[in-house]
Length: 123
Image (cartoon, rainbow, N blue to C red):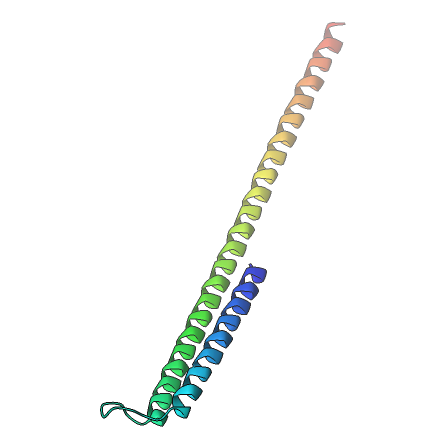
């Protein structure tokens, strides 16, 4: 479980780095080009908007990773609890079987002793 989480973190970090490098390259290319057309704002504003959007996206991904980690941790705790309960149930069942076996053995010994006493009385 921990290994899978670490692999997911590593993959997410690689993807975020790739996206960041790509966007940085696009932003730099936009800043270097002159603005053409009357409907387009200054390239610095576009770059700032892209940067803001990327920051928002990074924070959302970070929140999703945190939520996933919490969910995995909760599931791990649930699994440990279930295993503990199963172990306790198995131990309880073993104790019950052991007590039953001891009771049956004692009853068998009593019957054997009673049968021996009866044989002694006859002979």
